[in-house]
Image (cartoon, rainbow, N blue to C red; front, side, top):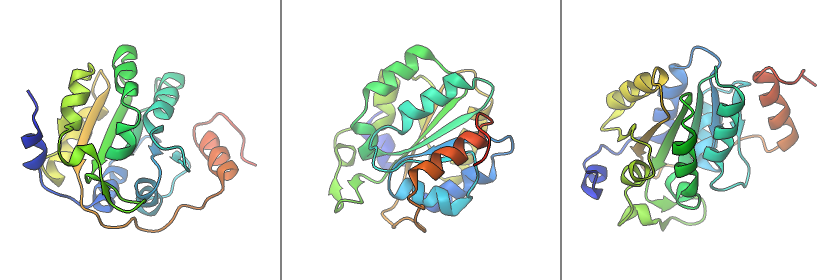
Length: 202
């Protein structure tokens, strides 16, 4: 059984470094959905690619959006990057994903225990809520904390060949995001759809 202690015993890593390690492992035009704020700022800076989707203002919807992409394109691996605060707003998505079992969906939770963008207020994940225990209890058996950077890369590699949805939780520091996403929703949408092969470029 996962406990809050499992969370505390993991290494605190840097979100941009972790994101960069993920992007470096993508070789087959995998889709990546970046949650709001620093999560997608770091995604933008780590490796801008047409298969990246940068969310603007839609807190808690990275996993539901990624689920839709995964169901629509079952032969493409789909990653979703989300913060702990955003995920805690939309926990029902975990049970829905577990029920639908898209084998090509990989969820990564960046957990620093705070709502960083709005003033660093603590989230429940800072004290009482264990993201991996919640995911496992929702039916996502392939859920784990990354112990360190090497373990994160191992878990990503395993998820890339898994036959069920995977969730990887990462304890991160509170460093600000690197860079800033260009805030043009239409451009973001059109580029992403072109990157997935469902829309001709503008």
